[in-house]
Image 1: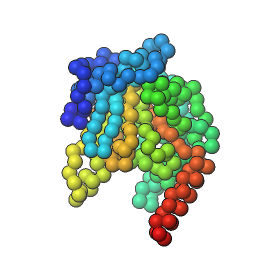
Image 2: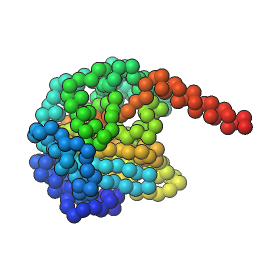
Image 3: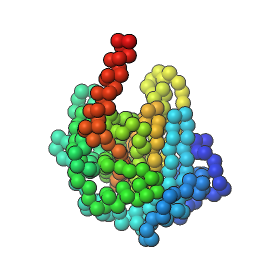
Image 4: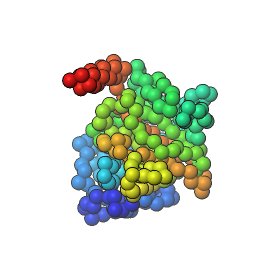
Length: 278
């Protein structure tokens, strides 16, 4: 993993994470960029991590552009986790199933979506309208926006009851996403392995052999998946049978409203038609 980290100021993100995550296990990142990535504003005082003091790890490979930090100290992360467990309403029935190669299967985790009014999001054969924001999700969203300068209007929540729950290799490249926008992944609960695999390195006979990138996403952490990561790399959360505790992951996204999405698709179709007939 270390070879994918851009070396920066002397220090240790791992040491910082261990200080914040008492009993949370190793985080898998051994170096930091230090404070070279400054944040524009300071968070309000509290038991969390001050945005001006965040240390960031930069994960880089061909087409892979991610940034990682501990966004919430342990006490605040514990509080948020408990609130999420009480307040989030997960899908049931038909919405708790997923379509794979034309067949429907039960999702090996719980899912929910929240966001702005008027949005829709399609994945795995399902078109969903998010539930209205609730205070605990707005709290996390606003902290992410504060330290990154990015805005988000939608969140997909995945709850893994233990290491048996998982998600297979996929890319978050749905057409509803605003072009070039990042995805902010915030984790609470059990530390789980997170795996990136380049699109050219998949399958039994890959066209190229690029090394897999493995991270461990700690309690209270933020992983920013910046463009063009989701164009070139698949990611997954594999089964880890020894993990007995639950994990809740929030992926904040910027979704195009239906009107803008239609305009973009129409413009793209017009350009394609012009190219075909010119």
